[in-house]
Image 1 (tube, one colour):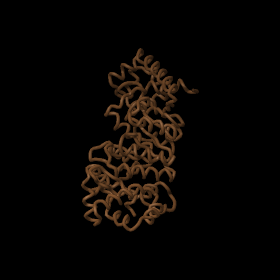
Image 2 (cartoon, one colour):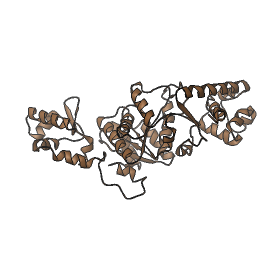
Image 3 (cartoon, rainbow, N blue to C red):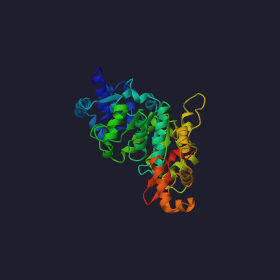
Image 4 (cartoon, rainbow, N blue to C red):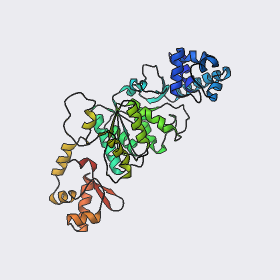
Length: 380
């Protein structure tokens, strides 16, 4: 590594306890380089900005040597795990992120660092997402990837996971921003997803190796998701949620904010509806997102998946009974009793038709003998 010593200085500053990125960057701007910050006296440092006692202790003569040793060990451990560490003045550091108010001092990257400078769209939403939310996130990511975008999310359960999976299904690039060290996979159930993302895109964190996924780290993580993105799409979110924090960061950073509408009586969509009331752009199709960043002729009109023609072809292959039953279904769940009553089919016949439609991918079964029309057909 050509600039190993220089990176070591940046990393040593990053490891100072109680010193955030704003303070760290302010000191480097004042003294010129991270090495000069580490060489400054306590009096010189405190003349630039106020520092916490824990920071002052770490920047004492003995403390600095310890920081340098810790930074050296961190670089060696990262190299063993094929993790790249990028300082904020490195050419590989993403330009969009560099221009936010509080850019991370360093980024840990597992995968392809060059992906961080791609044309990215953030997709975030509820961890306890509905089938509708997961389906829309997956289809939207899949379609945006096919139009040249990189999908950025947080690898959380629910909407985040669906967005990453939709990207990978389209053989696209996706970035997962973690709220812990890169050597800790969180949530643990996304172990394989973590590996797949690293192969095609990148898994990113600002936190040192070994940092646990404590709750307070995620709001800070969210500013990186929005900071890497041209715009952020909120698919499902309650009124008090991390997704709204991401949207707030996006607005502060001058990014576009988009929101997917849901049922007016759904708690899971209350936050997205609040965003719409506050001026977020309503997303009816991926064109509503793409047209903000593609300064060209509007894309052809399409529903969320971009598979409108294929869906019409499937619909044309249905017999009259299947079409009649499908007409009784919506993207919101309906009970078997409601379907029987509205369609006029006997229960046995209705169940038979529902199974056929499910096998054709046009109906999705839910617990409690409920069914819903596949979300991608809602715009038909």
